[in-house]
Length: 267
Image (tube, rainbow, N blue to C red; front, side, top):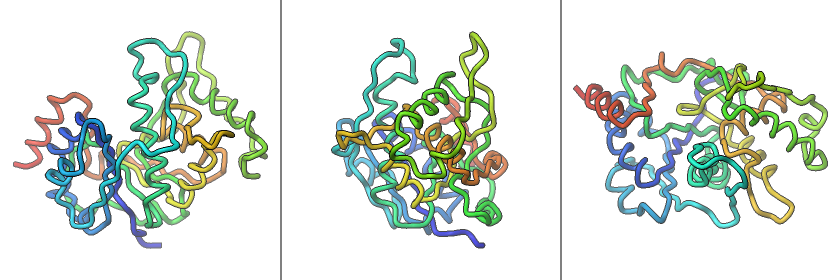
């Protein structure tokens, strides 16, 4: 199997649009093949505009989508103040990486690239072997989940919604990924999605599953990759976990690092 067509999907609010302005030029310089694929940017409409996005992203096949969409909820009860995992704005933006691809992507796969990712190296970075088994997910390897109870919440959600689960999930065993007492995370093999491909048709199925009885769409946990990784594992779908850093991508969280390394990549 060769490399299937894919659509690049990026989500921005005002802060992440400023990041994208720094890293976009590195993507174009070091991974110019991204310009040969379609691209969707969903933007948080209270802090950014279509015009601001298009002023930065000069992609020839760009679609700009307003976010959030009607009928999607992300608010949750509980959580400590200052805890990023309970931040409703963060949950809103991460929800976009399920519902926007499900609604707008037309290619077999879609690629999530985060705005704190700097591209380096050469453009020959996508390995056709990744797609050989038709995986649900191809994303950077990772070794733990935070917050520590996220996978427990997913086990509970599947159990409480057995009547609408597909057979491959309903007949599978819970993952039972329980953290050690006092730990803030649970250690296990999984993915992190700052650079990752996702099966589009399967993403649409998962988006439909995350629909409440009142018709509102809401992820069971405030994590797009936590939800999708868990569901792929319960479905028995293959998950490929390459090291995307070896493919010429650097992931930086601090603003000063994004600025420094994006400048370095352009020298």
